Image 1 (cartoon, rainbow, N blue to C red):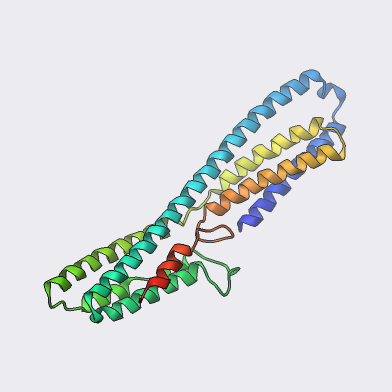
Image 2 (cartoon, rainbow, N blue to C red):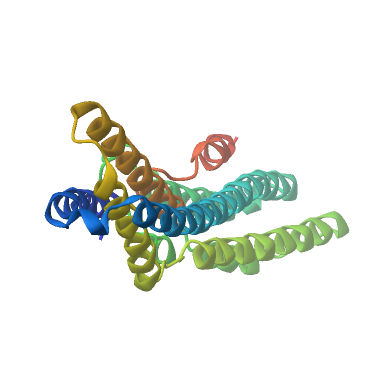
Length: 254
């Protein structure tokens, strides 16, 4: 289920709670809606509102932190790709096959995550496991036969950098596989729905109040949408910038 679907479902559930509260406000007898009842319900709804806001704020902050972590890792990976290419350049013309393979691997990775021709395509983070593999680069490095001490030192540095890139790549893949438990959405939506049922019980029946409550519902559902989007930093509408890797790709082979 996409983040947009989750946001729409959230808005519909909370809106249904609001209209159910409006219906109850007309259907219940006056003894259920007196001042004492209002005070008790307001106190209970205030507790639910505080709890919901706290949980939702923590979730969005956690997703933003994960998003920033992968964004920073992507920048570091781009820098290491450029450094590896320059080290191979220093090795000599014999390293050209390895440099070409590196450029091909980076290009495949960029196109799988940040496609230019089909930006609205269904981006699956699992595609990263199938593209951008650095094993062919390792094979090209193993085929090199250094003849001088400088080449041996350069080749050793290149292998270390490649090992770092492989580690960063798999770390990126694993960190991008964040799955939000369905129970979390169910509990949060239940709280918000109950909250808006209590709002509907005592809300005046006029367009201004209804519009304000609907805007609140849109705000809550948008926050849930943002949380779900940022929990998957490599796909969806909100994803980490591909500028660092694209810049690295532009520098390769020079």
